[in-house]
Length: 365
Image: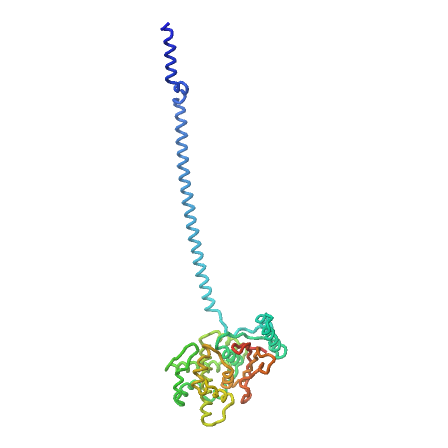
């Protein structure tokens, strides 16, 4: 009995002690171990390859972004430089005319005076008066600064080729600065101001001489040109050079000062003088040539333009009758005035128009 039960109980103990080995004997098979290893290696290889690809893609994207950022900055820099050079070339080669080309008078009026205020309506009526009854069809706009009255007059003198005033033909105007100092003892002329440029001291004579010499040269050249279109082309060149323009206007100011000084000397000797100069010398601020220069003339081109009395002196000095249409005085006796009112002989007539007695434009008939 004992022998017959032993093998059975031993078998039960063996089964009880090693259930896993009996239940899953395939784990230890050599073929299954190879499949597991291959799967593990493949998974690791794919993971490594993904990390490499991911890193490469990230690096490529970062590099591409850096390149795009660089080219964007380069594009902006080149754009700024190109814009600067275009502006420089335009300033360098484009003619900045101080007297613009002719434009239709009524079109200019419609552009400038669009409102329905009483003043705007008055200005439109004044422009219509010029167009329909005074036969002014166009207007040349003149740069708005404190030289514009002088510019408007001188432009017309040159563009029309007007001759020298008679008194300028008899005297060498280039020597007038020294004449005032040495012949008439006007040493106060050293306080003459060239527009925005203030006191110049002993250099004033050399500067004035150069200005007057330029005026004489240019005037002689323009008056000798018979072709109207050629004079117009030369005016476009001259009136686009700000430095030359300023010298010409300072020469005109000095010519005015010289005439005031001459008439003042005549008045002291009891000679008959034009009424406009008597009016000038009755003012406290211009009782003599020095006060006229210090209180009025030195400011022209700097802080103010010509006043009405100055327009009289300018017309008298250049021997031209300056007719001015004062649009803000429409429907009054002061709508059209002449400087000077009584010319000594048949002087050429120059026309201006103004909306406020401060800035002037050139009407074209």
